[in-house]
Length: 207
Image 1 (cartoon, one colour):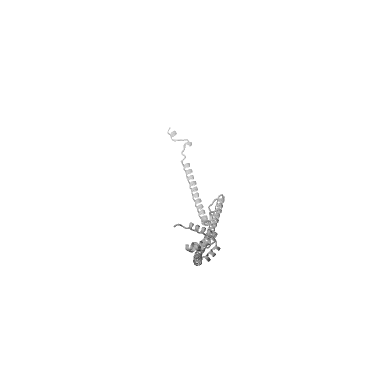
Image 2 (tube, rainbow, N blue to C red; image 1 turned 90 degrees about the horizontal axis):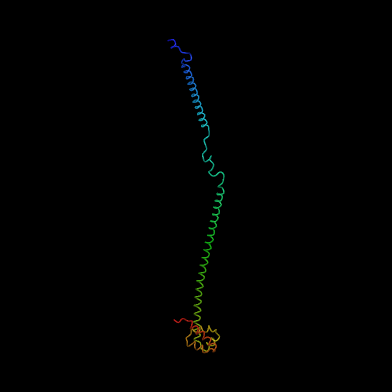
């Protein structure tokens, strides 16, 4: 009975030595693979560093990058339109500046002409004043001379004068001298001169 308890069939013997060998082999394979992986990574890193050291330095962004802007040129018509508008505005400003200069010169010319006309008008007024003064003096002298003449001789001269001219002289004389000259005129002439003298007196201011 004891021998039956201690004896086991061959299929039920323990397998620990075989499992241990398998574990050891697997550990060796894993360690070998990990070592190769580490060596491969080190070699790759060395190659990367070598390539980075031998490669040329990158160019600045200003040289490598293309200028900013749409590549398809869809905004090009708008840019051209803006340039054309700026050119038209510049031409208009130039034209306005030239026109302003022309107007300024024309204004200066007109002002100079007006100054010349004013000066000429002043000179003409002075001459007219002098002429009127001279004429007034001459008329006063003639009036005094006719008043000093004999009435008969003065009447002969007044007979040949135009009625308005004769009335002007008689209006300046003293009433007695004018009446003597008027009495020596023909009735027709005396009547015409008298009417003109009355008209002069009627047109004269009352006060």
